[in-house]
Amino acid sequence: MKPIPDIASRSQVKAYGEQVEMPYRALYYIVYLCGCRISEALAVRESDFETVEVDGKIAHIVTLQNLKNKKAVIKRLTIGTGTKEEFEMLTDILSYKDNVLENDLLFKFSRVVAYNHFSKILVTIPATDVDNKRRILDYTFKLHPHYLRHCRLSHLVNYYNLNNPYELMQFAGWANITMAQTYIQSDWRKTTKTILQKNIFYK
Image 1 (cartoon, rainbow, N blue to C red):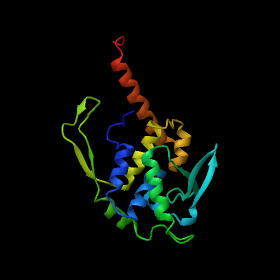
Image 2: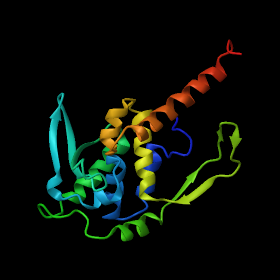
Image 3: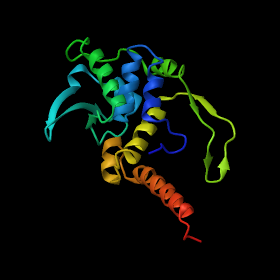
Image 4: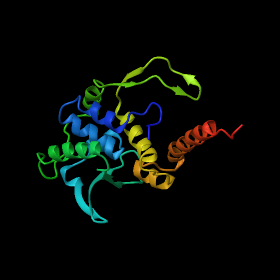
């Protein structure tokens, strides 16, 4: 399955992360895999990680404090290992975490410092045809941490079929389902349009 337009694939996300050194790479991978805000990732401590068994499989859980929506104080997110790329990202995170003192913050730098390191990554989106509006040239921009959150949420919908708006809302830490519906509806609308356009019986 191809990623939706303007969204980097999982392999591209990993490759972009390899352009920065530790500890910024570990932060980059946490923001992506947890689909969290940069402020939430910077507040993670060594003790916020735990390993649990779910249906006979090992899952890695990180507890995040929702710093934007104070009513949702804590959210527990599974760091996925569904693909080779995700497993390698998780391995980098855990290797870095193992060198952090117990209960200590994983990252001891500001959001501005993180932004500066992430902005060194240049993301290139190939020219494509979206809704009959053709972008002839490739589009290149400096990576912003929120782009990783956008990629992760899109991947959950497109690759993992997370189409329940309430589950996506809970994962992302939103206060309502409006944004979740936007991600999910954008997916089925594009799919439906593609099917209709390629159906020879559709006039």
